Image (cartoon, rainbow, N blue to C red; front, side):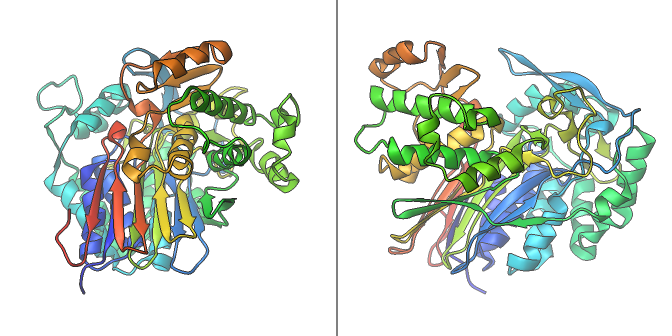
Length: 524
């Protein structure tokens, strides 16, 4: 089988390389995205895990896109004596409290998502797809600058137990995690990938791994049972769609929130567009910050039917508003650490996948090398106190895997990590492509801003004139000294089916990488 032309981008060079290998093997975009997801569990362990959850937005040639929701589910039972405690993550200038322990683990969906998407979309066998991850886990990978920085932030989680310290502890400093340049290995995870390829996903949800999860959970203050695992289902949803000029935007629908908020903002931009403005102008900065502020208000149900923006809200039809109210309100929301990957191939297949492990529960599941998630440790889903979450409910997320399918034969797959900043990061790249006519590299590299809780955070790069006008309508703003992972990591790919050309960009803010495969040339 010959090569398949295509492109993949992801949050780590080795993640991207795993996907590119599938193109080299003659696989499609879905083979590539699944191989990349498996590799990310090895090389991006704080952000991605077989014990976490995620979303895949898949577009098969000449088919309507489909959203695979394999995000975490709250357990069926809630015990009162759970192992659940706070730690402080150190972001340098600020610290943030997270909650870990086995009582923070929600039912994971990544393995189920991997196998269901493989069955329905992939062209290569599972042992080929997991092979790069197995090699990385067994042979090891050098910790790069970005992963070392992330380890520093969540050090308190990854040194919370002896098993985690043994796996991720530094050989240079017994009080620290792996540093830049050190080799990170995970032979138990390599064995697990091999077992999954041979035995199938049932191993994780009904077999020995499921029993291991249940025993470890119930012996140490967790909520998960065999019933949680056995009855977990991937939800296939119709993506949210917004038609924008001659482009069609697809993203993660309710019950998750991020896609709805991006769509809401795009509906506003249809009327209050940017095409008469130049990027970085004072009018651009002012209008974008206003749209972000309005979208932020729309996150609360009351803001959808109240306030001076009522006239603008009317541009959204009532079905959309009712969906927002019905599907979002009352569901537990996870706003955690994430990573993203995008792939596209010559056949017209496109895949956008975002995954998360929260920050991790602090323990390694024995003999597997896997740290399960800590999604139940999110403060935002527990406004009345922790351990009050609704049982057996699919959690919603800001994760927004996105596809832009254009009538002119140019398709884009994109998405981002960055919890609350996902929606504004993806929105700004879309605006840069659609309104400002930027190429993909320019659209991702351009400076960003993010509005939340009355504060507008701004990356450097905007003209001083534009920033001065903010004092009038957004006096509470902060200009950062340099671009930062705070503003997301929009790893993107694009195919021009008129010319046969592929582009890919790994966002430098989060250590991203992109690889283009041409069936007539070597990888570049």
